[in-house]
Picture: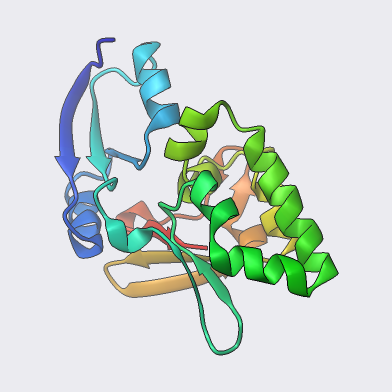
Length: 182
């Protein structure tokens, strides 16, 4: 397939991604890139600049703090989330959480084939601003917090405030923000 792009910048760190975004405010951020690349192949984003954050391993994985807040890095793929031991452990403890995690797992298992599950990320899924996105309803039910990192540091907001309207989310490009976790 031919991808008509103006430039592809590969971020080397979160700070670098923020700097690239400030330098190239028109650029599209790609993670796994499954949606964006499909659109480009269809000619919908011809001549776009892209900033790839795919190499940022610090945005992958699930962790938990003393207060039992679960933090999911934005680049975590759905297949990794549903298999993660922290997620698995919390499934068994609380029937309500078990229900939500199972719903998330099931929703995710319906996202495309295994290739999409391996490349599709929770950040990409939420940043598209599609409220029908497979993980969105579960994350809303969970009252998830979205973590955004920009030139002024970290901003956190409830997922219900992150979604402005269909296809639009509260990411401040002028501050170089990228979504770093849920």
